[in-house]
Image (tube, rainbow over all chains, first blue to last red; front, side, top):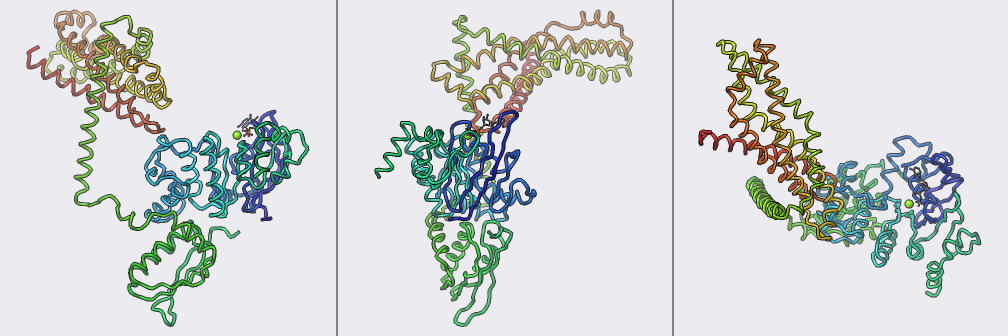
Amino acid sequence: MSDPVITVKDIVTQFGDNRVHDGVSLHINKGEIYGLLGGSGSGKSTLLKEMILLLQPQAGDITILGHSVINSTESERDLLRQRWGILFQNGALYSSLTVAENIAISLKEYTDIPMTLINDIVRMKIDMVGLPAHVKDFYPAELSGGMVKRASLARALARDPKLLFLDEPTSGLDPIGAESFDQLILELRAMLDLTVVMVTHDLDSILNTVDRLAVLARKKVAAEGTLTEVCQNPEPDIKAFFGGKRGQARLHQKNLE
Amino acid sequence: MPLPEHTAEIQAYQDTGYDIALKSKGCWTVNSIQNVVESLAGFCQKYKNSTILWDVSAIEEIDSAGMMVFITYYDHLLTNKCSVTLKGITEKHQRLDTLVRQHSVSALEKNTLPFKNYLLSPFHSLGKWVVGLVTELILFMTFFGESSLIFFKSLMHPSRIRYAAIVKNIEQAGIQALPIVALTSFLIGIVITYQGAVQLEKFGANIFIVEMISISVTRELAPLITAIVVAGRTGSSYTAQLGVMKITEEIDAMKTMGFNPHHFLVIPRILALIITLPLLVFFADIIGIFAGMLISEIHLQLSFSEFLHRLQNVLDMKHVWIGIIKAPVFAVLIAMVSCFRGFQVEKNSDSIGRYTTISVVNAIFLVIACDAIFSVILTELGI
Ligand SMILES: Nc1ncnc2c1ncn2[C@@H]1O[C@H](COP(=O)(O)OP(=O)(O)O)[C@@H](O)[C@H]1O
Ligand SMILES: [Mg+2]
């Protein structure tokens, strides 16, 4: 588990006068679930957007699956886009398409697979993310929050990506829904050999699923490593993040187990 | 990591002890799998009751789509009573196989697909269409009934009518519509005067242009054209406004707070149009006749004073009244249909567009149909 799938090196990002990242570096290994943590506005989503080619950093470079994000040709970028799946914070399902059509769309557009096979694949993915089969004909508006996340995850998994990006996958879910979603991510990782990068605030999620994590604070990576390593870091920002009442209670619980 | 540019392959060769041997190669992944589907289907057609050796050891990469294809045709061969021996299965294949089988629908379930027959399917869709139409009609009737009920109730208690909303709607539907109504009725006036003038000139009956213009404009054209413009302009905006409120759950919020959406949203719009449309029609009458007067002057050398003098003698007030009386009826139709369609909007991005289009088409159709009924009835009555 030591060859990095994603290497972020000295990223600088600035919106107008607002510098969001000032030399952010981290690396994500193959097969791990990697957590991006940090307070609100610390630039987690921005970093994620830079990884998935939605934003260009002002300086530094990100290498994903051996391709540099900065110096890549458009065809390389297309290739990369085929090899990851993304779960957006609010699902971002296409509201005019049914769940099945949402999942099938990239298969239809980018491959020549016959329709019957696409339908089979779609049904399989729906089952994989734990949705009942009949939701395939539902429109996104007819789904509950948890179902939207699952459907959107099924869409992200449509083409068997090796890399999965999740932006706050459990935010807006009730604790039970969030826990079962965490469980799902763990199962899928084991089944599909995924590497998962997730932005999250959810302490339970961090404790249950994340293998390694980075905490963003003051425009930099305040700490990176496994949860135990990060918790031992004496930096005040880290203390602030895990030191609150909720954090302490959870960590304590975890240690008892 | 190899890039998914590789292709999937399957080849048949002879091997002792088996009727046929298959060798799979390459990347059996979602990007390349379509290469083998056809040949696999071919094999499944060809081999029944055979012994088959299937060598999968040369598969470099396989994902769930590839495994799905493999499983589909492997099972197909088994149902063909072939005995298939697999060679070179890795532990990873095994895991993926279990995974895909666990999550895919069994063949039995697939066979319960909805009934489809190409001979009967036109009837099927016709039936569906008719049922859909009848349902819509019933829904519209219900809506019409509910709105009318609340309409009459609010007439009983005039203090509860939402006057502010009505005034706002009158401004949007009436005053802001003046330029476009003026332009269209002016152009219509020009068109019919030109057409009429050419014919009348042949008979030297220039002066009859006045009857022609004034009666056709006031009785038929002005109400119809104005109603069509209003249906396109105001009808579509009513549908879109209510549709957005439906999507943002404002309408649900109103209901839970005990505000009847008919009372708050529909009635003011209907009343506003009932007040506005007759006024717009009268305005269009004047502009249309004025355009006729202008063209008569230019083309038929009929002076303004001659035109006006004749107009006073020949234009019965009844024609003007008929045109104006139609207007509130059209107004009710337009407002009802567009509000009805607005309430039908669903929670997805293209349904506003769809229902707005339907609403305008429906409203224009209803206006024209209603106008035809008016014509028949009034002519039969000899008015
Ligand atoms: N498109 C943008 N334009 C300007 N500023 C932005 C933009 N996107 C994000 N920012 C700023 O970048 C900072 C980090 O935002 P974000 O990455 O969304 O934080 P979070 O860690 O909460 O996901 C915020 O201060 C935000 O105002
Ligand atoms: Mg964010």
